[in-house]
Length: 122
Image 1 (cartoon, rainbow, N blue to C red):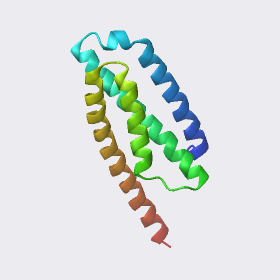
Image 2: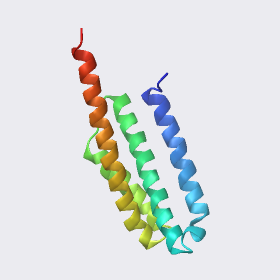
Image 3: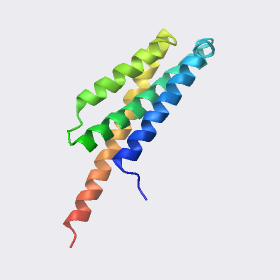
Image 4: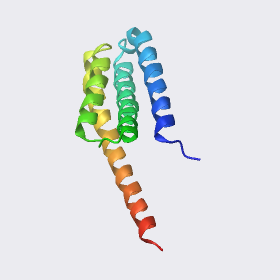
């Protein structure tokens, strides 16, 4: 059974809070080496995906259209969170977030095409 927008919105908000708090707790450790700094950017990009899911589900449940504003807001919050860890985390967060956004867009187009073929069949 698929989760509706309300349940998915709640789960993504909880994941956002958990990831952000863990990232802030271990920011000293994440900034201690080059590899962990890149990992900090990856974690920040996960914040982007979870926040984008939250915003998209909120807009879907309220009847508004989701657009680039949601992407820019989620990316801004993720980059600010990455900036609290290390400057390099900002760059790696942006790169990982662009990759995640590309994959989300591909998945969305696939699901939309799949939904259109189900509607046309009698």
